[in-house]
Length: 158
Length: 290
Image 1 (cartoon, rainbow over the protein chains, first blue to last red):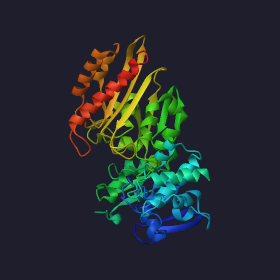
Image 2: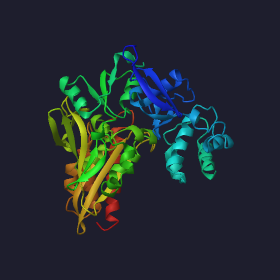
Image 3: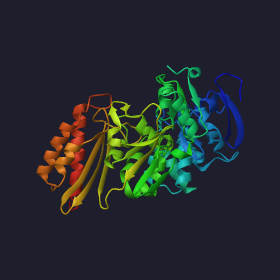
Image 4: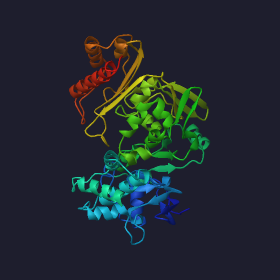
């Protein structure tokens, strides 16, 4: 337990590494990841669960980290964009995003990558409708979406 | 403005009994926190007025979908994703899966819960019209016992419910609809994902010969509460679907709903859409022999 008033100690696994952090139980996991753990790949967009920029996987499920309080991360297995690649080898989704020009300003990209990784884990052979649904919670203001969509199709072909 | 976190509390009771004891010892002091998809939004906006919460997300007693005595029990912590993945619900209560897949996006569906959708008591919520159509009962638990309330009597006004301050939603119970019943669900919003509904329409119809038997209709976003429409249902029951019946039912529906103008839509548009959806529902029935 921590000595700071109102704060709790939370143990979880982030990108395969077991760790413990102190936070207010209502602290957003988005802030814990970015500020306490210095994993700034996860972005903040709307802060209200609408845009998907802060998407991470918790226990294998896609979530908006801005809506997850630290108290609910106890014992959780968290995957952020920093943990998607296998060392220097990019995930098929990441490579396809590069190849297809799926990233422009880059703010939505980590969330899009996690949404696509999550989709392909659940549905290795997605239909066009599956891809659209899988990405529907992630907003992009640059690409017009088609290049991101193409990247997911490309990633499936690998 | 963002909330000042030190003024809030979020505790994690180890068991359901511990959670119920919190509610018993200080009714109204502590409130439950499940998936956070509504409460975290309010917190971030600095609009979360209540200060003391307890997390229930890990309580296994409030999880799971099962069946006994011909009734299906959906634990309050069942997520929209859990609803979508349930073969039992897909087979007998298809409107729930249709509602769940149009709630938020995948990330919201992974956290938001059926119990939270009820407790949040928004008249625009997506699953409640389906629960109304299926004649759901809400199971409430407290330190002093459990009780069941018909969902049709649960919401008493805008954001008001019959729940006592020491109670928690444990589950919803659904009787199986008759075999061969026809189910219809359609949500109209600015886009399919993420958008809050302008109008949400759920309905069920059973056929008796070539006439309508039992008909149940419920709508979201057209009244201060999610609304069952018994007067419109009465117009339809026992009748054959034809143009004249369609007009009569549509006019009754327009009288039965009380939509308002707000940031998402207008009363006039909502009424038009509600009538059109009723028409689509009924036309779909007549096209296949009812």
